[in-house]
Image 1 (cartoon, rainbow, N blue to C red):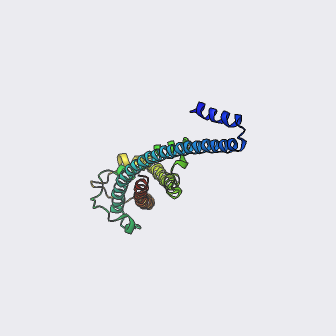
Image 2: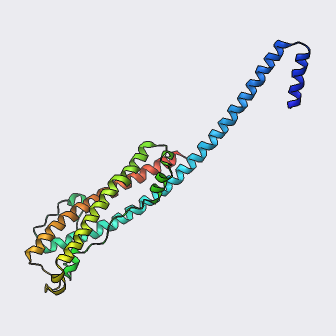
Image 3: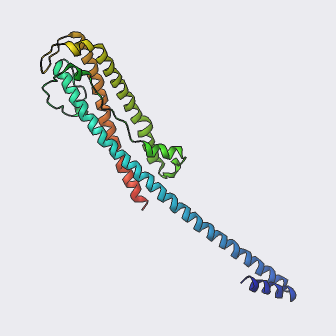
Length: 241
């Protein structure tokens, strides 16, 4: 093909058909440019396709992590509702201040040991691996819906971190109280189920109940927002099909 075009050019030059040659040359340049543009368009299309595939993978994995987060939050909420009920069984003056958000508490008969009053180990720790990987690899722009990305970022970097901080405070307080009342825990006679009358212990129970109420409330609200985010991710994923 190249030899064919070269022969045409040579014939035109030999026959002094300069104008025809120039028009031919311009046409040939235009064809080359069109070919380059088509090749670039194909490359761009393939690149966009690969980007959208990668975006769907990230969205799918983030959704999977968020679903696991809602399951863990359900466990945290149930455990702390049980603990709130246990604390209230010891002190009738404790207010259940977020019942409209948290929901009804379970019925308990009290606890058999004082240590259980101050014991908590169920904390919310989000599955953040996929999000961290996306950020560390500089792929945050791969999620084309920036409003959706901002919602994901807000969950992981603000709301989940707030819950983690509150949970750590409660865990630290639990440890401090177990140390503070180590003697009473080991040697106290409270019956079974126990009934506390020591005002020092009751005062600490009162403060702990407020912290647990707040932590449980925030956990319920976070679970609701994560559930809404999962729905947004489903909608975005469907739009990429």
